[in-house]
Amino acid sequence: MADSTSTVFQDRRLVLCVGPGGVGKTTCAAALGLHAAARGRKVVVVTIDPARRLAQALGLEDSTPGEVVSVVREPDVHLDALILDGAKVFESIVRDNASTPQTAEKILSSRMYQATAQRLSGALEFAAMARVQMLVDAGQHDLIVLDTPPTANAIDFLDAPKRVRELIDNPGARLLAGTGRLGARILGLGSSVLSKTLETIGGGQFIGDLGAFLREFADVLEEFHRRGGNFEQLLRSRATGVLLVTSASTFSVREAEAFLTQLADYGLRVDAVVLNRIDKTVPEPPPREQLEASLGPEHRDQLDRIWTAYAGARALGERTRRSIEAISSSRANLQVWTASRQADPPDTLPELRELGAEIFG
Ligand SMILES: Nc1ncnc2c1ncn2[C@@H]1O[C@H](COP(=O)(O)OP(=O)(O)OP(=O)(O)O)[C@@H](O)[C@H]1O
Ligand SMILES: [Mg+2]
Image (tube, rainbow, N blue to C red; front, side):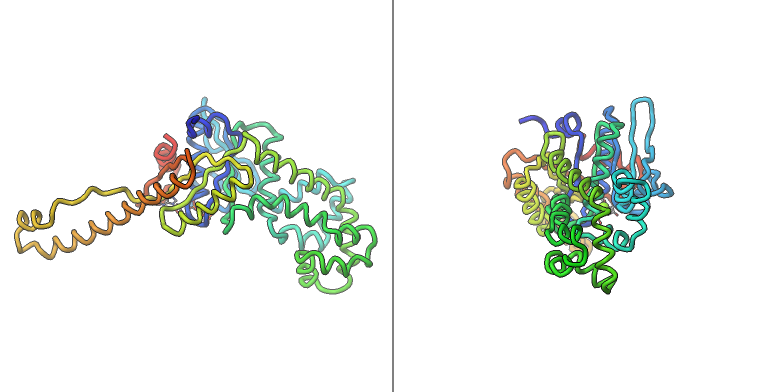
C-alpha cells in the first residue's frame, strides 16, 4: 500500500478535514497546511469559523472574510488562508453569471435572494465547494485544505451540490419560473425550503417576486447546477483525499466509523483518521505493596491519591489504545494518526507546526 502520508503530501490537490463538532478539524486543517507548505507545496487553507486565537495566528483576524491572506511567505514556504464567506461566494456566482450587470444587481437586491441564499439547507457547504472551485480555477495553489463546518453527518456536506440541484430541478420551481402565479401551489407542496421562506416573508407579493426572480435567476441557477456536478467529480477523483478527524471517546469513535461508511459509499478516498487530543498510554505501576513498603505507612494517604490519579490516566490511555484498534480494524489498511492532548490549545504557528509534525511527521 502506498504510504498515506506521502499520498496526502504529494498526490492530493484537495484535502477535506471532516469530522464531528469540536474535535479539532480547523486546528488540524491549519497544522496540515503548515506541514505541507514546509514541504514545498503552495497551500491555501480554507477555514470556517476559526476560534479567535487561531484566526489571529493565521493572520485572519482582521482580514475581510473571503479574502486570501498570506500566512507564511518564505523563499520555499507558501501558505495562504482565508475565512469562508458564504454570502460573498454566492454574490460572485451571481455577478459572474447573470445575463447583464443590471440583472445581477436586481437579483442581489431582491428580497427573494436575500431571504433564500443563506438559508437554503446546505448553503454554507455549497459555498465552501464553490469557493474551492474558484481556487482550483485560479490555479495559484497546488494544495487546498478545506476545513468543514460541524455536521452531524458527513453526507450533509457532500450532498450539498445535490440538494442545490434538487432545488433547481424542483418541478414547482421550474413551473413557477415559466408560469408565474400558477406554479405557486405546486411549489408550496414541492419545496419545504421555499415554503419556509414564504412563511418568513409572507403574503402573495412574494409569489409574484418569486416568479420574476426565478426567471432572472435561471442563468445563475444553471451555473450553480454545473458547479455542483463539477465538484462532485472533483471530490471523487484521485485529486481529493479526506482526513477524518475525531477524538478517542467511545461516542466519537462510533461516529467516525459511521462517517467512514458514508464516505466510502460516496466514493471518497479517506487517507487517514486523525485521533486528536489523545491521552498517552501509561505503563503499569509497580505493585502497590512494594510502593507502600518503600514509602512507609505515614505516606499512605498521598499514595492513595496518586494511585487513583494514576489509575485514571491509565484508563484514558487504555481508551486511546482501544479506539485506535477499533478504527484500524474497521477498515483494512486504514491509517490512524494521532495528536496528543496539549495543555494549551495549539493556536500559534509554532504550536501548530509541532502538532503537524506529531500527526504527519
Ligand atoms: N491536540 C489538541 N490539544 C488541545 N487542544 C486542542 C487540540 N486540538 C484542538 N484543540 C482545541 O480544541 C478546540 C476545538 O478545536 P477546533 O476549533 O479545531 O475544532 P473543530 O472541529 O474545528 O470545531 P467545530 O466543529 O466547532 O468547527 C479549540 O479550542 C482548539 O484549540
Ligand atoms: Mg471548526
